Length: 404
Image (cartoon, rainbow, N blue to C red; front, side):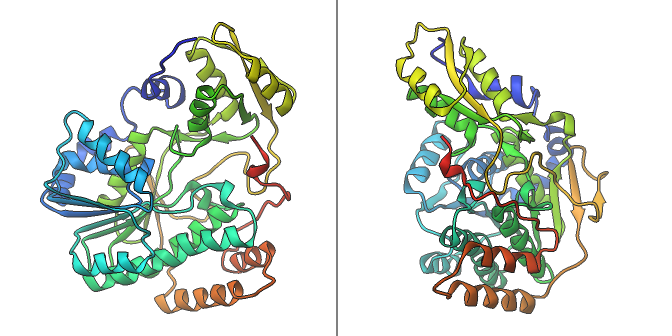
């Protein structure tokens, strides 16, 4: 077995099938504008220790912001971010660089925002996994983070009026079937309500290949621990590289107009299954795929596996968990699309906007619901559905916590 795999090379060779970033042409054609908007500016990145947030930071640093403040609840993640940035050739870190390990919904974050002036505010802090959908407690935490905390951030921004405000969304917000996607669709509604006062844009992105916590990232962990690879065989997803995810968000943050929702103009032929990527991953390691018929068979074979063995155990299965689409999409049929301004990016041009008062009334209803002692998951799903007519929740009674 090969002992080393270049993940970036693997992504470009087997997943995105692109040697150059999908967004490079848009970056090149807007280079002067990006430089003007970033150079000498003060930047706040929330959730900056994650894959997309850190990739956004790497995308903007060549344009020389004068200061960079990064907030993330993961202290370990911020430590690794700093080590990574300072160890990457060619990256120039601003002298005014500081990281803070706290939640962006916390009081201490509020004090930071009131004390400092930021030209660019980009938020990547979110519950972003379908796996987070379990019961009423898990869903309440998701809604509070994705929706309530977004409103708190925007209320703070109203008092400082930064030049750009960006909060990342997800492709799962288009015709959502899971609570995560529905919560991000609600977040988009909150963002749009503030566009009369702030310059706010967002982006729906594809799956980020090998991002922290993703199934593909899990492949690396499974191999390191000599555990079997498992993956659904019937789910197709769009993918971008980590670098591309940060570039997409940089373009959307700085080149977007108020109300704009950006998305990558990827074609359906560019979707892949997770099981096919697992097969390619093993092949890159010099291994053949040993298909197993159950989790137990795969675990037993993995426990006996030796580095001299040519086959590695996998278990592929049909999707049966709540909130899983067979494929993803970036927009709905009724959306007004701009497909000409950018080479690789489409833009949903929104017109229907709720007021801030509408948002506040909506959140009061959620607070009332969360206060119920006997609250069940379905109660939250029903309230979300009342605000999102396109939310068609897929409920199977099973979550990804029941899967390897």
